[in-house]
Image 1: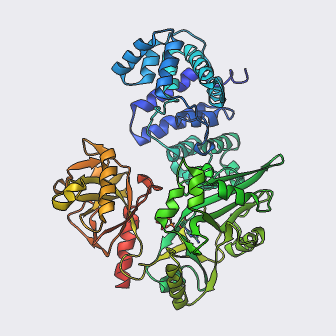
Image 2: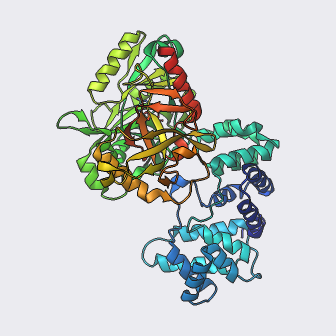
Image 3: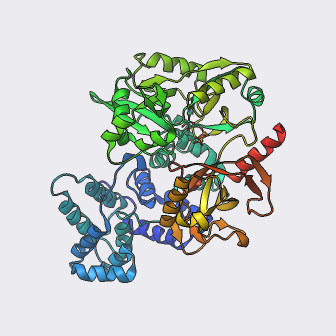
Amino acid sequence: MRYNMGMKFSELAAYLQKLEKTSSRNEITQILADLFKKSTAGEIDKIVYLVLGELAPNYEGVVLNIAERMMLRIIAQAYDEDINKIKLLYKKEGDLGNVASDLASSGGINLAVGEVFEKLMEVADEGGEGSQERKVSKMAKLLGELAPLSARYVARIPVGKLRLGFSDMTILDALSYMTKGDKSARHEIESAFNVTVDIGKIAKRVKEKGLVGLSEVEPEAGTPIRASLCERLPSAEKILEKVGKTVYVEPKYDGFRAQVHIWHEGKEKKVRIFSRNLENTTAMFPDLVEAAKKIKVTSAIFDGEAIGYDPKTDKFLPFQETVQRKRKHGIEEAARNFPLRLYLFDILFKDGKSYLDMPFNQRRKTLEDALPKDGGVVELTRQNLVSDPDKIRDLIKKYLTEGLEGAVIKKIDAPYKAGARGYHWVKYKKHTDEGVADTIDCLVMGVNKGRGKRAGFGVGAFLVGIKSGGEFKTVSKIGTGLTDEQWRELAKRARKLEVTQKPKEYEVPKNLTPDIWTKPSLVVEILADEITKSPLHSAGLALRFPRLIRFRDEKNPDQVTTFVELEKLFEMQKVTS
Ligand code: ATP
């Protein structure tokens, strides 16, 4: 019983109740800071995962695998009740946690947080034959040992219903409050989080060693690093002015980000691949895993882009085909139909050493030396050293004829800026020199039913917005520029997202109220001819001649273009015209 000295689960449950009762971000942060203050270094990581409704960082894939139906059986067994009674209670309550807390007895052993965590881990670890039954009995035993309030929250975790309305970012703020009493350490803590995205580990480090401990945080193979992102500039001239007199120009592959981690566990070589959003996508890409294993390193973290490639025609596949590889089923078949090439463009860690602070040209040299030169699945990203704007334009033309998206221009001696969008990388796409320098990622906020020909599609126009603080503000009502197929696809998707009332984070002028509201979920990439000032739209800016480029399934609503970014794009076009 290593943990029975630590915080009691009942105390954690009282905090969870307080968190549940408030929706004020500030209050949530204070409550969490107080909770973290009371936790010990030995348990704070577990507490962090638990308040997020998890047992480990997301990318570790530690899941309880207990569906609602199974949870009903667990509750019945825990409290020795008939399953039909439990079903009835659930129907009445609408929440499994409340059903459990209604039935739990107020006696019982007062387990420590660490003990509950360990028992939940045991359930998650169950696999193979008969594991379902073992999960049921272990979970039931655990619930039976908990007092009502504790039972309520433990019962919600497996079914993903802890829902306390905050994310990793609030935890970072709370850690700052815990150490400094205010937000002043947030930046420092976030910088460490950027390098190793295990929020539990960061919390533990702060608890053990204070803020100074964060300076020792280094990347670790297997734990994602937050991706570096590109800024935009209106022209090749501006790029040379801002990024450097001489820059590296690389093709911008239109596939998906792949952060590739390689390390050894004993004799076994391990590979993990993370997406732009740091989801663990390893299982989707057995071909890339195979190829990565051939790279001769003891450990390494590479940054790159995977793109579909047809070896017969020697051409890249368009994004719509590459994206077929992002799937959970039929992986082998998709790998045969849409083979990938993995273009690596950076190295962040090698043989136990961080390369993040090394200037890019030196990292590039290390990358070149590390990669096999056999022309297989893994390739080195092409690069040109350029100091002439015409040369940049020539290169981009060449890339576009090859079916690529444009270029990424990189500062020669910049460190790798984990989690940052900055002028160390600037993207330059087809449209950079004409009008709006980049496409705009918008949220679909609602749709209007179609009339005439569009009546058959189900949708005739849709309302899109960008992000401004915690709100979404409108920038366009789009009624043209979609193919018939895109209209149908939009209608299908919108149907699934329909909600009866305007989501509270939407700011929409009355006269733009759509026929159907859609909850914040669907992100679309929009190309516009111009951004104009607009009294009509709640963002105050509007998109002129918008066209749908694609549905951006890999982006979530948090990642749509922000008002600040849109304003920057607006200012940029004023400079060029
Ligand atoms: P976009 O809509 O342009 O893909 P984004 O917000 O996803 O935007 P950006 O920061 O604008 O990301 O562009 C960087 C993205 O471009 C990376 O996430 C990566 O997936 C892709 N990319 C393709 N080629 C390169 C390259 N040579 N260097 C860096 N990133 C590249």
